[in-house]
Length: 76
Image (tube, one colour):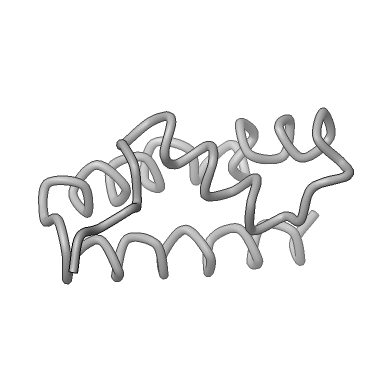
């Protein structure tokens, strides 16, 4: 569980950092999502991973964050 938690926290944090450079309001949402779900060891993402085991974990993490905070597709 601790290694999963670390993986998820790192990936979600990186998503928040990328959002900071592109869409600050989304970054605030991601940061709030992380804070809200930290105590549960990111249960929403772990549940999604169990249901979607054939997908890469990073894809599942970004899908959960997109559902909560919007698309990570940025225009260049």
